[in-house]
Amino acid sequence: MHESSHLGAPFRERLDAFGLELDRVDAGDVEALHRTRVASRRLRELLPLMALDHEVTRTLGGRLRKVTRLLGAVRELDVLLLLVGELADDRRFSAEALRPIGAAAAKARVSARARLAARFPAAKLKRLAHELERASKGLKSGAGRAWVWALEARLVHRAARVQEAIEAAGTVYAPEPLHRVRIAVKKLRYTAELAGDATHRHVAADLAGLKTAQDLLGRLHDLGVLLLRAREAQALLFPPDLVAWRDLSSLVDVLEDDCRRLHARYMRHRTGLMAIAHRMAAGPQAQPVGRRAAVS
Image 1 (cartoon, rainbow, N blue to C red):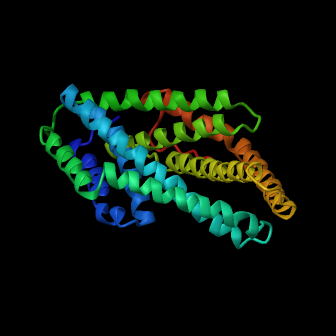
Image 2 (image 1 turned 90 degrees about the vertical axis):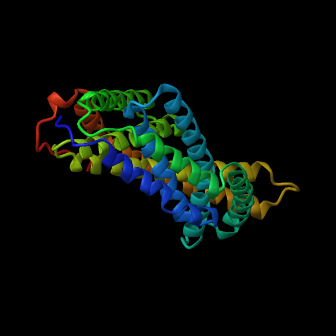
């Protein structure tokens, strides 16, 4: 790996992305919240590499983790509502069955947003961004290769976790193990992005492969969440309503079919995804300049 001139540049880029839309997050903007959450995750990947005081890293990392978790709780409900709206326009799905699921998700989102606003209003998030910036002032250009070595080790670790998650998920459709693959792929992608910023190696194709897998597994997860909500709605029907039951049963059947099709696509991509993780887990010496590979 060839060292970039300064760790501060990628940190500045990620910190700017985190602080850019905090007022819009406070105002309830769905996409601003999504981008801020992604930025918080990318900062969390970078923070341990900055050789800051251990207590400073622990404190700031812990606060970022809480922010990511609260943003994530809102984001999952945002995605569920967007999915309900999307599928309501698809004639394969029962709009009547989707309506109460959407209403329950909207109510839950109000509560999730209230928790976010109470714990981390925009002013508090801006203070966190300021503290991260102040902590980064100690970074010095030309500080040596220590952070690059730490990045290499982190990339190898993240890649190994992807391999482990893929193997643990096996070949049978099971939502939770596949969700763990998705999370592992996402963390590897963020670390690989940072490695690409810090080197002269061509990682764009592998990053595209990771993004493809992440999107596929994300869609599978989102449909799985909706499927769970539909089954819960069936169980809660009282008094019994035959028409509502049939609508929900039809929704469950179509969602199950779509989940199986997506899982079949994942299985076709699984070998390519494992190959990307294997190369990254082997370390930089096994990744020649110009190497191209992707999940297709």
